[in-house]
Image 1 (tube, rainbow, N blue to C red):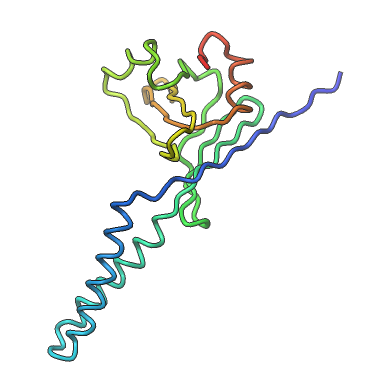
Image 2 (cartoon, rainbow, N blue to C red):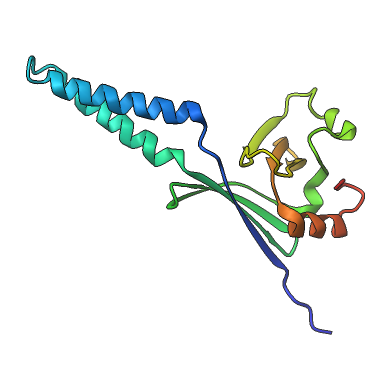
Length: 168
């Protein structure tokens, strides 16, 4: 019998919050004002340079995506910033899952009372089906709660192998 590798992948694009867009616009307007005031006093050069740098930083960090990949029982969650920089958030085995359910699930709510680290990896788009998952990181690192949108394929795969822990 030939055993095949299982690989599933899903990408979720995070919606840019309105407040973040406003802050970016205010930063740009302030930089332009400082640049205009430069004709009156040279000290405004410092302000305009600082605000343009802040504006560039804001623009480069607004566009965020999350890549979820499932490979033979191993799950990787990666944060992609501005389409180029990748930051690995967490990697774990499906056996490390304690529970996966919708955030309103009563069984999951008992984990919310304790001091547990949370990783938010959802798009925040209305109408999207997202799940909360509690994972054991390692013996000495404790547990972490992950909010994510795995999609139907990955969720069904986890349900198939961890049916007592996954509530779809």
